[in-house]
Amino acid sequence: MQTRFTSFHINMSSSSTHHPSAPCAACKFLRRKCIKGCVFSPYFPPEDPIKFTNVHKIFGASNVSKLLNEIEPHQREDAVNSLAYEAEARLKDPVYGCVGAISVLQRQVLRLQKELDATNADLIRFSSNQNILNMPQSTSGNYPQNPHALPPNYGTYSWNYNP
Image 1 (cartoon, rainbow, N blue to C red):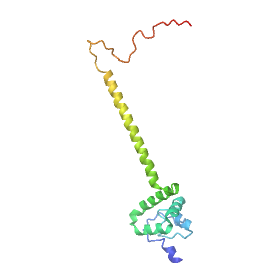
Image 2 (cartoon, rainbow, N blue to C red):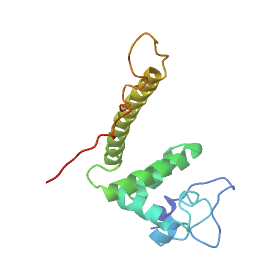
Image 3 (tube, helix red, strand yellow):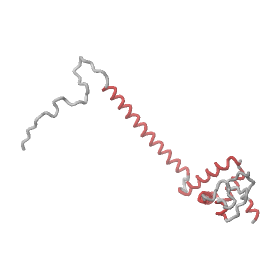
Image 4 (cartoon, one colour):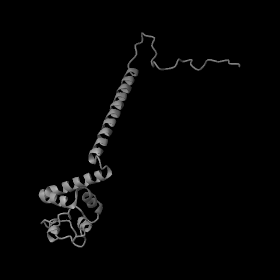
């Protein structure tokens, strides 16, 4: 039993963020005494027990411990954050996990790109129409200044409608 307990602990530098009076979330969940040098304590603080619970459900405490012991100390925080993200994604979507979330985001990017392209095309059309309307008109032609303008006597017709 003692050898299994110590497999979760490694020698860490004294800059650990673990508070001696409160066990880390991992040790609390595993109902173990959290000792100085606990591999989990810098990454699973007691204030965030769900983070370890999710990681443990998906990957298992033993696998996480092995992983953390095998990688360089400067890579551990990123590894734990990746495990936590993947675990949360797997719990939300057991089949696709974070790949499902990535797929949703890729579809959203494509939809937004199409929307942006359509908006840019509208802006180009609007800009072109404004340039045409603001062009100086030749005095020799009988073209109206604004091709969309109504004739000057529009609305002055009297309609005598007697049913």
